[in-house]
Length: 252
Image 1 (tube, helix red, strand yellow):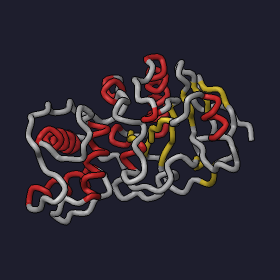
Image 2 (image 1 turned 60 degrees about the vertical axis):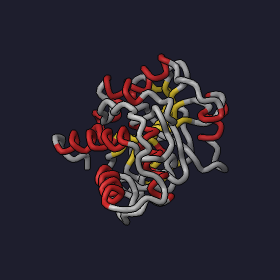
Image 3 (image 1 turned 90 degrees about the vertical axis):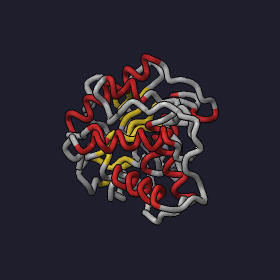
């Protein structure tokens, strides 16, 4: 199926892997491909047997390929959750960024991130996606995914107007909360993470699920140490994001 590109700078390479969109678009999900080359990623994303795709693929030099029309449901996010939404594929646009991922965790290329920024600006503007709706795959699938990784430059995107961000609070050397802890502080943390959008119940007990969500939060918003422990830096960064959220319209 051929179609005209919706992002003017994109070249179309059509993938057969898509279906009917069942939700309004309100999220933009960013991924790394986890593959060494654009060619390898493109082969996978266009393979009917693989049953995986994305709307866009951004090369290392910032070039953009469009694989699926935005009106269609690309198969990029899988099982997930964000702020009550469970059909993430239907509610989102997916951008894959060519990068080997945690197999070779190095910085993304400057030209590539510039390409991501311009593409994301265009997608968000045309689809009315607010900053709080720009997410990592790991935000929506905390038990399964860690992409686009703690080396993805979210602050650079935010400085260009893409995504929701506050400066992360500095590390303070405290041990913070961790698995096995219980009580009001844990309950407040869980409620805060759930209020921001993460899939987490409020039990007052710091369990494995809480640690996974905290690590996902750190991977996006406080990358200096990703360990699943809610130290004061992590908690302060969350409080800053929630305070900023109160001054913004809801992204839904």
